[in-house]
Image (cartoon, rainbow, N blue to C red; front, side, top):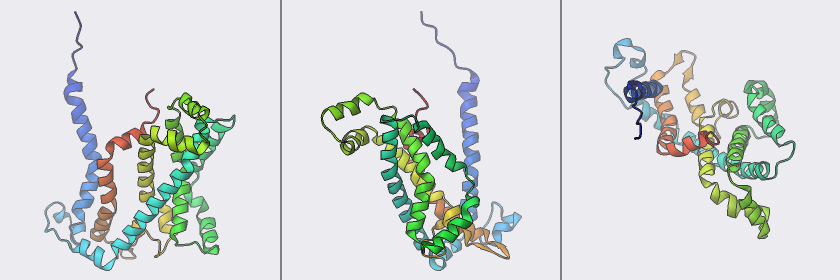
Amino acid sequence: MAIVAQSSKFSTFGRPVLAWAVGLLFFFPIFWLFLTSFKTDADAVKPEYLLFFTPTLENYLNMTQNYDYWRFATNSVVTSVFATVFTLVVGIPAAYAMAFNPSRGTKDILMWMLSTKMLPAAAVLYPMTFLTKGLGLFDTHFLIILVLSLINLPIVVWMLFTYFKEIPKDIIEAGKMDGVNTWGEIKEILIPLAWGGIASTALLCFIFCWNEAYWTVRLTTTDAATLSKLIEGNRAPEGLFFGRLSAVSTAAIGPIVVLGWFCQKQLVQGLTFGAVK
């Protein structure tokens, strides 16, 4: 007779309640930001209008009419898309070489790439600004795409390397025996087999590029300025304009929140590569 284990009360009731509590805790700042975006700058700082106020679209109208929101949004889309594509073009062959043709220095190279993420960005701000202005690259799309690509390349290589390691080497060797060259192995064998992992990696890379604020604010002024620069612009000597700042921030995070909501499965897959054997 089979013995059926009874689930505890915590598993039945406690875990769902705990999960909802954590979810609401993380969602609350987004909700509060969205709520504040419909307040005027004066109402946003008044305690009596904390929850009960007269909603207004003034901040959103001001954002689109006076702050040229669409130009900043277009720059964010262009730089994020091209940086993601460039990162994958470099990252896929690099991860392929390390996964299927490793050398004694492969692990050291991977650790070195990861160690570059430990460098404080402020430590290289001055030389980066001086160099880019000297080369005439300051405030250009090319510069932002290049910087975003280099920032995210170590993470992309690590993720793809971990996923490629799950693919049996026998499949790649069978392709070599059939006379397929290296590019053919990547194009005809590796990419179709690892398409799910590549797609989730691309999605995460796009999110990282979209959310990057430090370099996009400091290496741009007008021409290549992204939404991060627009958000930073709602600051003045007399203080922060919380209503306008909330509207701009909501419009900036809205597309990426929606994208993440519809791509939850791919995001989870990308964040758990190699977690379960």
